[in-house]
Image (tube, rainbow, N blue to C red; front, side, top):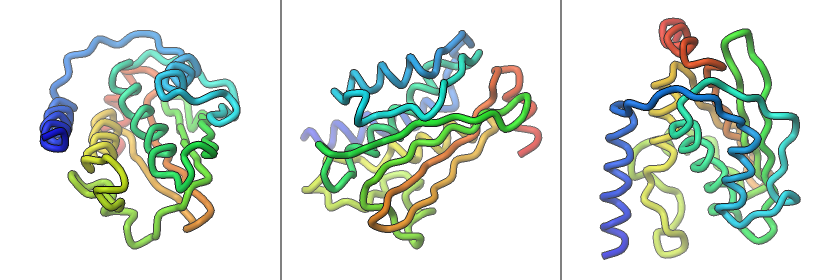
Length: 181
């Protein structure tokens, strides 16, 4: 019953990505990452920020959803979640674009699965081992692409994974990113 409820909620969240009527506001990305860490019960030693994260004029709920999914997955799918180390970093790509990365020291993802993991209901974990609906990364991809950005994975099995995505520095720039894509 719980799994069915989680799947229904996942589908609803996925379907709402395009239809959100959220107003842009100032978002301190560093504070957002600290809030995610607190929600996950993770200390600063296990969730590190590589550099000072910027303040963006953006859709807070959408950025929160992307980062929560990526950071949460980094811990959730780690072979030893209590010892997982995750880094979040951001670099300015150009005047309108930020590149955010979430890197972990987990088991990695085989290259043959890099595209598959972004599909709805796809998960590489055995369902009994990890509570997963297979919707999180599809929401990440849909949200990022809806903002005109792109998401990528760089992973070496047994050495960890980096998920990176581009995001507009200001909501008005999202239209420019969509047209450039």
